[in-house]
Image (cartoon, rainbow, N blue to C red; front, side, top):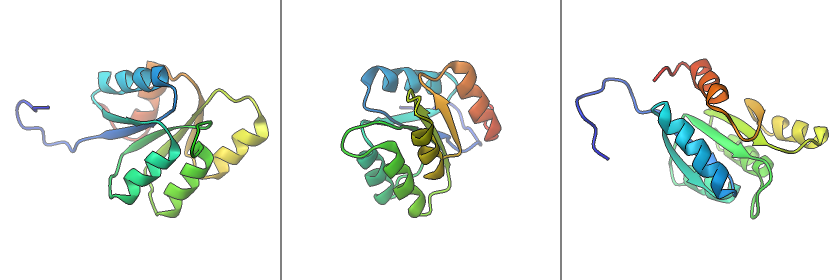
Length: 131
């Protein structure tokens, strides 16, 4: 990917963690539309491994229910590594105790999936990113 001109603002990156390929694509496209580079992985273990390898992101969109490692465990592990970026849980689960467990794992916010452009814009503006 080539960048035209010189941009003085640092790159803003996001990680989409979801086993649903359609949701991955949708969330990545929404992020890219507002100028955020997005990488996608299919489960929490891949997200944890990326952070263990030294990768960092400004924002993580974390699904709750995934095979291999779910979003609750992945969020706990990422936070235990000292990662302080914004982690937004994304879930379609209605079970209130599971949603609370996800929040308690270290989320900054928990939203219903799929995300919309408006919800995503609000999140990144809260973080001080305006594109």
